[in-house]
Image 1 (cartoon, rainbow, N blue to C red):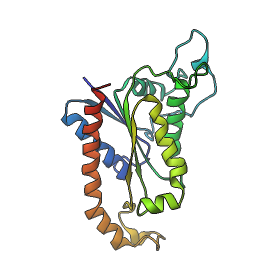
Image 2 (cartoon, rainbow, N blue to C red; image 1 turned 135 degrees about the vertical axis):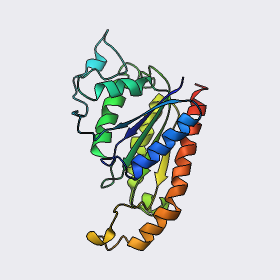
Image 3 (tube, rainbow, N blue to C red; image 1 turned 180 degrees about the vertical axis):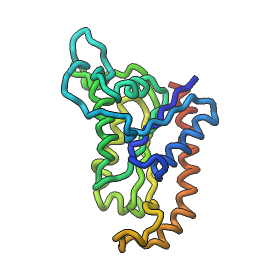
Length: 220
């Protein structure tokens, strides 16, 4: 059975990022995948980014997966062995969330092959995607703000494991009650309209993404 792992890099378990990941997971399950969602900001998780221990580079040692023992290590094992991997993150000051970035460090560095940079250590090829949510109103503004410099590069780094793609959800709804916050440049009525009209379309795109990734993974 196809194994699909969904990584929520947002602190919110029911926010925009999580909802899109859950909908993508619905699509994956619909066509027969075994799917799991991991919330990296769960309080039960205690982990850091790469510790520079170089255990993944020791001659004769285990390659391709981080061996540093903490709460993240079992999740990294699942990610390495998954057929489909979907990560999700909001844009925080032009960057992925800190917890997702730490996860990515621990996932990617063991795959970097110091003996042959052109051939990463990939224990299991996989299809992957990164779901990115943000206030940014559209793709033109996304590039104008240079978000692509860090966000896209981070997402595309999953390409070392196989085909990968980026999924954008723009102009997202952040607050349940905009009147409580100093957010004058985020018109509440406009945000509500986007939540009601555009976000449902994004959810359906996410559902199709989950289906397509599983379908494609069967050809690897």
